[in-house]
Image (cartoon, rainbow, N blue to C red; front, side, top):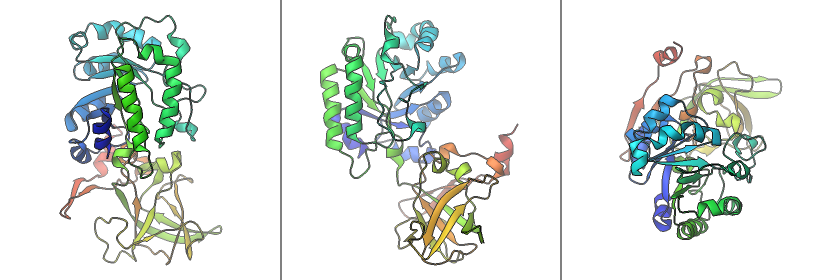
Length: 380
């Protein structure tokens, strides 16, 4: 679907590695993506190695050594502030890849136009450190800059992008129309693969931008590439009642394995797979005859699903089931590919789940198995 939008609009779709960078999955995306967008040197190296294509990099600030390495292989490097651009301008413009046009340099813009609902994910909130407001560009020497970049959306539709672009256009349209600007990066947060996303409206806007301003247009969705493509399999370790709640302690943690459950906050779909672990396969997909857990009180038995950590708030949520949960029961949490593996921690020394790939022929291939040495190795 993302590839089809790219073909119809002429825009280039990048994979936002901050959302999904499991290397086995990048191999699947490679034929459909134009490349990647990276938040720094390590992601850029990973994308260049496992995804290929165009490498676009943006970071709120760069160290000299990492910038020097990025100059050797990136295709776009965007700067977050006027001081960052002024500090590194001479270094960048002296590089042969910049002089030849193989590497282009851009600025991240802040259109100061909010459409989001969660302040944590809104780069346009008052006091934001992300991007350059229009008034800060007055009188600034932009020679050497050939691109503009804004990123304001989070799980949003085409209408919000259209509104944001119109606000951006009012403030920066003259700069965008200048001959020196060769690309526009519309950032991420586009929920293009959601069933009710208005893809024709997106295609229309992308075509309009390309035709009116004669620039190359990039989008960098992350979640949209990986949504509903992965599950997290959990086992019930304990079941008990306390202070008016039924609790089920799982062998997975919101804090350590899926922080977005706490940060967004995000409520995953939960499926009951087996009773007491009997006959539970190594990998199980939702929608195969297993019951989707309900809201609290919707089914006969409501449980608060919690983690085996000491953090009081490390709770996945309250879910109801048709039958009581028991120790060793298996449940599956859906939509666990994006913003999960990339955010995992070893908080409390909680073991990490294996990363496995379900092949088209039904084979399950474990591509990464974590152990104690992974925990110890992070600690020096």
